Image (tube, rainbow, N blue to C red; front, side, top):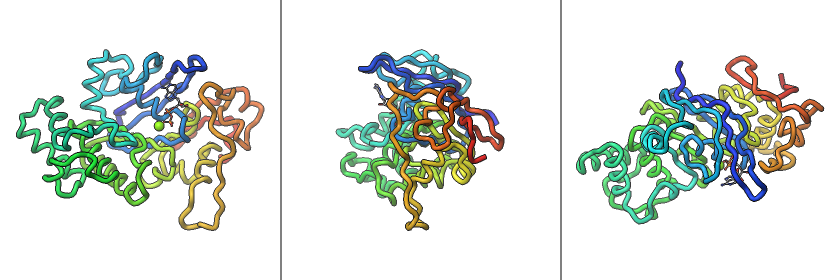
Length: 321
Ligand SMILES: Nc1ncnc2c1ncn2[C@@H]1O[C@H](COP(=O)(O)OP(=O)(O)O)[C@@H](O)[C@H]1O
Ligand SMILES: [Mg+2]
């Protein structure tokens, strides 16, 4: 199957108070048409920065390397204007805080219609019809009156649905959802995940779902990639990675998840904290926290290699093979 998005060797460095620091260090992944691709890893592992890089949304002074093929073009080499067209239409993004994409002073209807009129050149009537259709699609109750309401009049979950409607307005092929449920309580979170799952089935849409909580991906992603310190340490089909993790970091993330069916089982928090990008450990960046680390782990960066079954692993020791 041809890929919708193919990212190779993505590197991002940013200027910081400690000098120029590598935040994303050679990330590879591909997104297939129509799939939900999950990206997980603790906070600070470079998930958001690696996505912002694709849309030219990095802070000033950022250096970007590698390539990101999308629709026959390398997003990292598109002129700014062409990239703006792509990022408004073909690739859309939603964030943890829906107010990042919503305007507090404009009615929901106004935001939706302005967006589709600007990008799709629809007439006023057509744009209103499209706005209504979008609110129905994301299951906003009473969509007709919702058109005249303002974002603050909705709950967090409903606001996230509206932000998703705005993202869908121009019929994107790829929706990047960055921690879209992190601020929501568990039931509302489940509703948003079901919505994303339905949208990709009904709209010929791929979703990149980013989360610091591997549990979020347990029911929805087709394939997942695990990020640690700006690198991919493991990737593969969701069930395989979650049921038989191969990287000690993935295993540690899973052991730290609460198990509803076994509440007496103690949670095993991962020892230590993820490193600051200014002080990434040598060799395998996880080695100071890894019970299986060897001398080689301390010295050599393990390459991400195919291990069969569509899986890839970056570990010298592969202790669970
Ligand atoms: N504008 C910035 N300038 C310098 N460092 C940044 C900036 N934005 C993020 N970082 C750093 O980059 C690292 C990765 O951040 P991010 O991609 O947001 O992580 P994640 O989304 O995985 O939580 C973090 O250590 C963060 O502190
Ligand atoms: Mg983030």
